[in-house]
Image 1 (cartoon, rainbow, N blue to C red):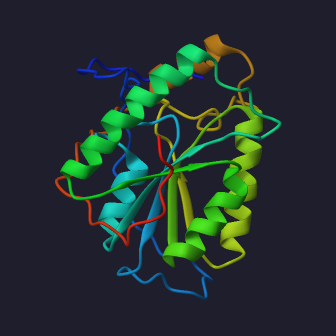
Image 2 (cartoon, rainbow, N blue to C red):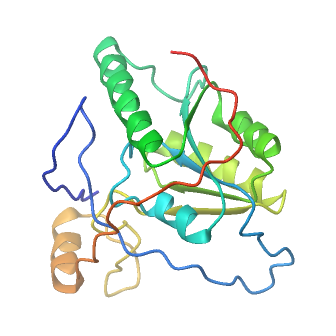
Length: 219
């Protein structure tokens, strides 16, 4: 995949930022449950521990209503590789700074540990959230987990939407002349250069409306 990087001041090892398209709410034909904009929305932070230019967070704020900012330390998930000591050190400081940034805007970072497939359902019930947003991940185990979470939430009529928060263009954005997806990087890169237009940055939110305080993981 082609990642987008831009320089920014980092504290505690924040991951590099990226640029993403402005999020617009759209009506889904055939939907039988209309979201209540005054109900909470959950933003599931994963590899995107930042407030600036974050499409999932932007969608939750533009929706209106309280926002539950969530990070799950995915432990005990067999398909995922455990974090090493250096990664845990980095994650601790990155989450610490993210929590400070969210608090400064009026919100709270909720921390959980375990399998996100159970935690997202539990938190949705706990907060009565009617929407869940996250930025996509692209490894096969992570994609499988995310698909299970999305399916479970949608079965409960929860508005569940994911966004591109880290790539110039997603792998399925361009097709070859025969209509198939690119499997070789160089032709994909040429197609990207010929067709890509950089979207505007989403910027940094001015405020985060806080939902009912959730049970937090001590650290």
